[in-house]
Image (cartoon, rainbow, N blue to C red):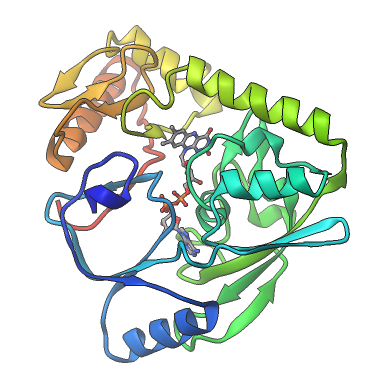
Length: 286
Ligand SMILES: Cc1cc2nc3c(=O)[nH]c(=O)nc-3n(C[C@H](O)[C@H](O)[C@H](O)COP(=O)(O)OP(=O)(O)OC[C@H]3O[C@@H](n4cnc5c(N)ncnc54)[C@H](O)[C@@H]3O)c2cc1C
């Protein structure tokens, strides 16, 4: 899985299936369910720490579900489309609303699952409806999540949500008419800002921990205060340019990365008495 995650970390999957269509995806998950075969839906692998022993069962690679189509003020797209391509499609159609997400690694499906947030904008703000697939029956359905089903980095697809375990096949986004020059200028600024902040310098999964308003300051500042910037265990490091971005300095193992995460959590707990919650998801066997 190190070839399929932005961290470049992770052991092998038992099976890796490139899914060709939403219909195939539905048929596969219902068959796997009946046969008790575990599966995992992979987007761009931009928010994952996969264990060194890999993933048991089947990894479903959804990157072929990568279509996009303008529909009036709306943009419909498949879950496997990269967020960058989604933004470029909106730009080509002169539709505004997605600019802040340009430069964020990952796919439409992952951005919906995570309710990704960029420059103070939640991905959920653009969502009109989502094409979802039942993991039990493979049945497809249109979901229209209400505002209360979303939150800061929270979506109805996560544990405890109404559609926990359901697959996302695609979505319809409600955008506004905009002018191409203005849209392109914001997109360019966002990408340059990320580049200046070192987002693309070394393999990472973006921010390691969530921010929490109760802490009174951003998690990066908390980790900085603990002197963690530049800390490392093996090839797993806290980036020297932002303490909430953990990086793979070469051949980091998942075990080293997890040890570094736990070290930061223990130091924060000891110094401030609160628990830092990882934003990055732990997947597979460590
Ligand atoms: C350099 C860098 C910068 C980043 N900056 C930001 C940022 O500014 N804001 C932010 O919010 N995040 C950021 N991230 C994290 C990451 O880009 C987001 O979390 C992104 O939305 C993950 O999408 P993905 O497609 O890679 O999902 P993955 O990492 O592949 O999967 C994440 C979860 O979504 C589930 N999933 C994916 N697709 C589907 C589907 N079709 N159906 C059901 N479940 C699905 C997976 O099973 C998994 O549980 C950054 C990451 C990097 C590497």
